[in-house]
Image (cartoon, rainbow, N blue to C red; front, side):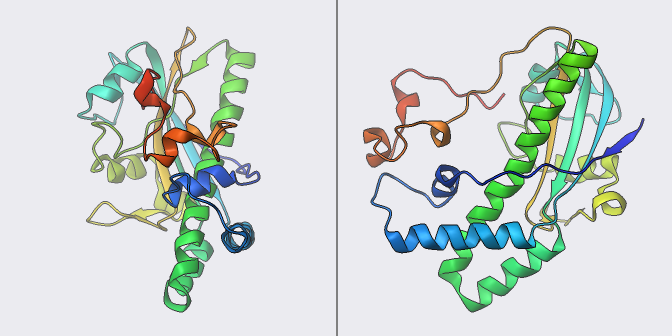
Length: 235
């Protein structure tokens, strides 16, 4: 099977997503915090060097060839699929070193910088998913499922190392996994998506895309509107 390495697409960071990572619960955002977020987002854009590798592998009865996973969520996700996409993304070692320096020099800024970097790596994954979804539909008449990463649902975090092995991430994008299943550089993501012949129900985006994010009465109470009837499954 062919490895695909492409130039990752990286767009503006969503401030609502950054606030979610910072534990925002409807409290007032001060001008100082706004400026810190803007400054840290700029640092991420300066230091991040995104790299991405992916492979398409056959699926048989919800199981990826060469990557058996003990996960009912993944089996359910891939049951209607004939192929799977395995994905790995990292922001690179420069971002990792900058995060570590920040943790020593200014811990309060490091927390915001960490949130910005987390949003950035998901941003790269989202743009890749959008581009691949459009390409599959246009060129092959196929449809991409939602994305699922180790650690979500019952997809075990222990699958991280095997995913990286199958994608050869050490050689291809400089991404390793420790014995404790931590990826290095830390701002990295691995994920699985399915390729199906029919359109699939996709995961609903959450609070970060809602126009009521800053004024939401549910967030001020530490909840959100999924508790009044809206479902947001991870797959």
